[in-house]
Length: 510
View 1: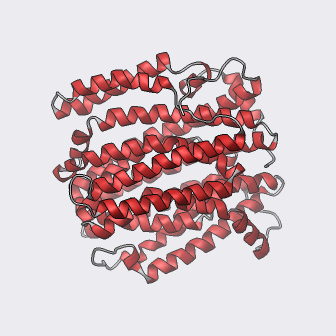
View 2: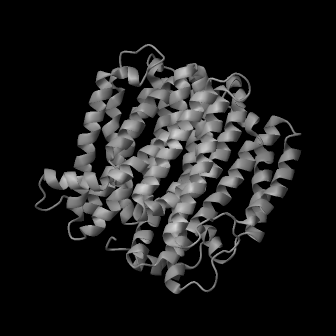
View 3: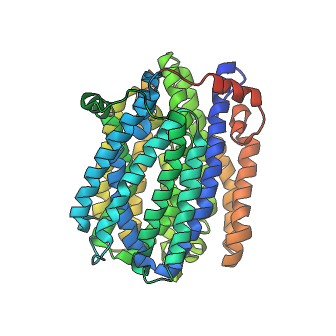
């Protein structure tokens, strides 16, 4: 699984141009990732300090329920829409309208179920007067995701950054802060969430309308909609399995533990999952690049791009594991004294993101070359996680409760990483692993710095210590691990390669 063979000078100009395009798209979304990180911490601080762990746990479970339904309502179109747009180059407005209509119908049906059964959103607490109508947020989430997927096909990553990394998290934080001092405090976080998703929906829909316009001669065609839904069925299943792997732990924990423990786990999960968003930042540009090369039969180039992105993602995630994991107790304590006990959970969940990186990137190609087998592996991982979580969560001792839920997720993520990367390598006939020995070599000095940082007071750990660990890893991996095309992720040069990559953007699907 380990390799240390970065992209070489033997790459063709076209391959170099595509790598530059991937790096440029990743840089744009990486900026959004940093903005989202900056906005997420204020919300968690506000929620922990002003609302408390129990209220945060209630919020976490309710948002998990609506996001599950919203994800199902996208019908796999977050990743599958690119193929439909490529197949209909002369009627992309019609393809977009079909996708939005399908998602709207599905989301309205899902929202109706939760309005009728609000206990699915709030299983462990009493219902407040407005709780039943919290499900009304579902269409806004689903339609925004589909609109952003359509824009991503045209390499408009900036729309996703604005909607998901600026508008959504900052509206959430500002509204939660304002509502904490009003009579609406009991539902303050839920109202803030609804407002943030509405704002993100408007920020996604406006540029989509400008880009695609109103389809000329378009009409509702049920058979065409059904074909769209049916063709994206495997993608919807893979989305469900991936989402379930990220939320199953909270779902089971919420059934066996208090709302306060769920709130502590939620904070740890939010911090740990932020590095994972770097992988998703490559999705908008990775999909078109892969479909273009698959259509041309360039399997070696597909594998090379998967290896490149896997290495980039692993580098950032290992940096997060070291810098955040080693000061985890101080970091969790920022949100309140009750949260400090969750530092072990945070460390395990950070390791989960590291394990899951390879599987997540491999799946970006598997959904085009082995949808059925990819879905099978996703289902296997979900079953393993569910069984382990049910067993470990109910255990007494240090490996039970919230720690048990995190351990179950870690084991399942490692299984998925090995299984999906080997499946993709066998399918393409080329290695796809992005791990390199240089990652381990760069981790050693950062680990040594971290052990020294732990001997300092918590304020020092959270400021100088955090950046010292991060800086030591970053400097080492840059010097010994990043070679040639690896450095494109953080480079601002090579403008001609990026321009060439835009010219080679796909216009036809596989």
